Image (tube, rainbow, N blue to C red; front, side, top):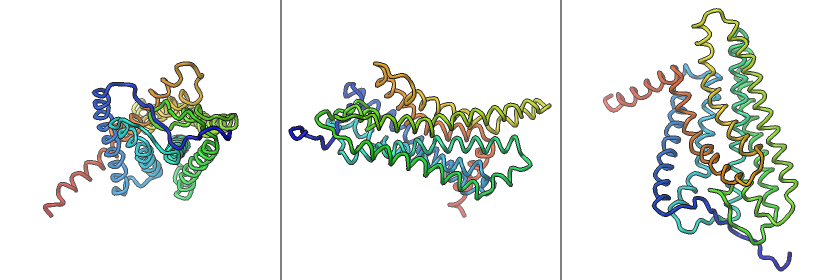
Amino acid sequence: MENQTFVTEFIILGFSTGENMQFFMFGIFSVIYTVSLVGNTLVFVVICHNSQLHTPMYFFLCHLSILDICYASSNVPHILGNLLLQRKTISFVGCGTQIYLYMALALTECVLLAVMSYDRYVAICHPLRYNVIMNWRVCTTMVTCSWTCGFLFGAIQVGLTLRLPFCSLNEVDHFFCELLAVLKLACADITINQTVIFTACMLILLFPFLFVIVSYLHILATILRIHSAAGRRKTFSTCSSHLTVVGLYYGTAIIMYMGPMTSHSAFRGKILFLFYSFINPMLNPLIYSLRNEQVKGALVKVLRRERSFPST
């Protein structure tokens, strides 16, 4: 080990395409990133400025918007920069920072989506006790636990990764310092890292996903007991948006980190990451706003207020 040179920076391979295609992708990804930031910011502003939306469901949605803004901003700007640069390097510390933010925010969202499913379960299955069960103290505790779990497991992951020696290989076969792609470059045993990743997937990915499924099975049973067809449609519409987001988020995450490892895993991971980091944060505000009459109504009020403000 004394004769080996340890790396101080990594090279992000990213897209193996021509210069013209990289400029094209830069334009497309810039638009998607901008739409994601604007959409999530609008949802956040609308919820904060409308007192009718100061309920547990929108409180959680507000935190989901904050998460999506932070999540996209933790790696997308660096990816956009790499599309314009010839040498796509990142420092050892910068790589560790990317891993930490990516894992912490992703794991936080896993727990938060499970919390949101519990909120919908209580609202539909126990409506008379909803205000008692989902009081603000409980909601604040749930959100705090979501952020704490995500950032705690993120710190464990990055701590175990940065302790590893990286001797000569420094080309990360990904668009950024993705955890699994970086671990492949380590010149030491990564069994502990793999064990911790598996544990995190079980505790913060698979178990919350199973919890969501159980919650929605109870919700479905309650909806089916409603005699009116219009009542069933109205009740299900209150949670269909969240169910759509859950399917997209957990589905891609489970395939990425719990799917079988094959020769095509690296390529598959890149494609899923594009959906995970670009498409998901953009779709969340669109799904929640376009399928929610209260959010759309509050957005219209905010826009009307902004238009009339200069004339007052």
